[in-house]
Length: 273
Ligand SMILES: [Zn+2]
Image 1 (cartoon, rainbow, N blue to C red):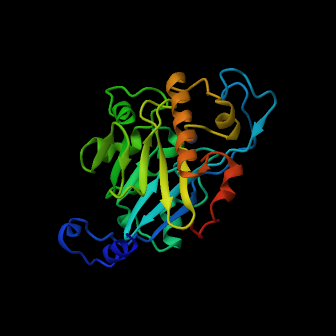
Image 2 (cartoon, rainbow, N blue to C red; image 1 turned 120 degrees about the vertical axis):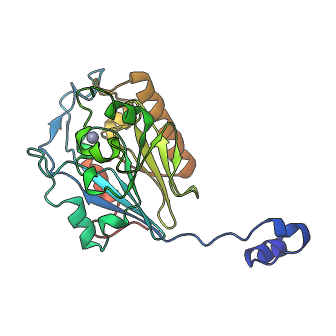
Image 3 (cartoon, protein in one colour; image 1 turned 30 degrees about the vertical axis):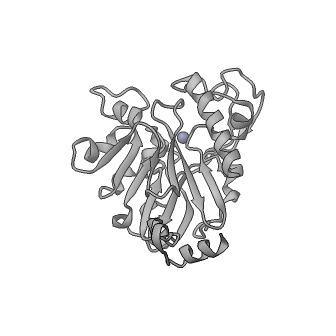
């Protein structure tokens, strides 16, 4: 058996064995965290972030995170943070300028993946008009509704709404590069079409970027549901799904808004490989 495997790995085949194509070389992959907003002072979370009022006097240091995923010569930008004009929380450096520091231009971004439609995840999407927009169908429907609901940050999507730019709304999961290495996971509940992102890195292994499926560690550990979520039931089911995926792949969960998770990835401009 070992001999056959060796032959297959070398791309040599005979008879029926020829049906199996030799495996392609794994693409060069990396994951870089970008800073996508100025952190507010520590926030008391008991009332808004637990509909069972579970957190007493707990204060959480929130941060705003975006991520660049390199896959061979292709790029996915995951979330686009606050806009550069957001009061108090605007980023100090735009995503475009951060990308410039690592030698990546906006035109090189093939895909922009959006976890959900809130302003702190969508603020700079318009800087990437050439990218194909990947977003949950439920959130896309909310963005394109005749009268978008409060909290749906539809304005920066104008180019995609008008049809000038390319969008692929996702009703379920999306295998971004077609090889299973980067998968948008349907994790509804915070919003109707909310997604998280699974990234399988060659060296670090699997990483799950939470989106806002959870906002901080205690949400994840105690199944805490913010009262403003779209669906309590879907939120709990999505937290359960993420826990299952983390277990299956022994993944590192990075909670995008939790300052305690920043150190799970290398500090910009370094990238996880
Ligand atoms: Zn958020």
